[in-house]
Image (cartoon, rainbow, N blue to C red):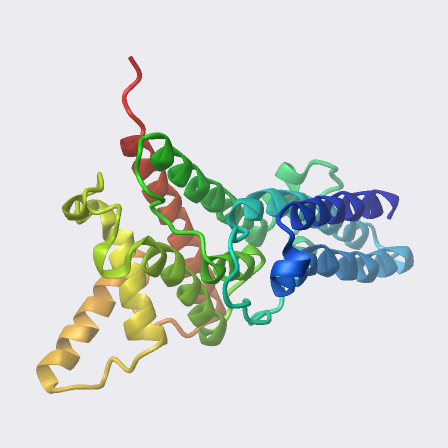
Amino acid sequence: MERAQTSYDLATKSILARAQELALWARNPMIGARLASIPAAYASFCESAGRQLSLASETHLKNALSGSLLLAERHLLGSIDAIAPFIPQSPGPPPLPPTVPLRLYRVQKEELEASDTLEYSDDPEELAQHSPAAISSEDVSLMLHLIHQVNETARLNGREDVFTPTNKMFEAVIELNGMVPTNKLVFGHFMDCLYWIFYEGAGKDNLRFRAEQGGPLSDEECAVIWDIKTLRNKLCRHDQGHGDKSSIKRSYRTLSEALASLGLRQIPHKSDHYRMLHRRLIRRLVDFLSGLLQKLAPPSS
């Protein structure tokens, strides 16, 4: 638990330094509070898991609990670094309170407990192989780093930010940080976050990464963006059965194509469906951002 306390102190110190640098407490205290909620969630999990570990007698459970603490520590330290570039630099409307509780740490623990092949390890990379949630969490962190790198590269080449940092984007980044969609409600929040970042945050009807807006990508290379828009609008936030017969048929066909591109041939209704869609969308966005970054960077001489 001393190690957990050290990690908590490091994360809190990093947050406080960044908040002081940007005068967050005076300018927008709700943003500071949302940042502080990350180490708070970690501390709460460590207290609970540490108590269970002190009472555990079975070796497998001990391994799972100690492993879940290491995975939580890795997430805490990595997420502070990934989120920092998205802290808004100018005042704006305060972000909303958390929509979805941070469930990642508990899900990682449950997945380690359910693993028949888990042995003691102090290597987070090895432990993550027993937890699909931990792997997805690392992909989310990579996705956030790539968004920042895309913006930095665009600036270096005299362009405006591709993804405009706003309070709404910051809110989405915080939500994505520990989200594990297992039902339609949480999956809907997940899709809202992706929509805010990759559609609204990139120009909405004038997407800055599209070739017709001066960006480097063809519409075919933006396929994952169209799938996000379809899933959010036709599955999560609107009734695909609304409208005349031809528009209803068209909506279902578009939704079917988007789901099929992610490996699902039916309307999602089980936890495994939502987890799979979450995992595959994040992976496709990592590939999308990697391709965008490569095309934004000028060829080396």
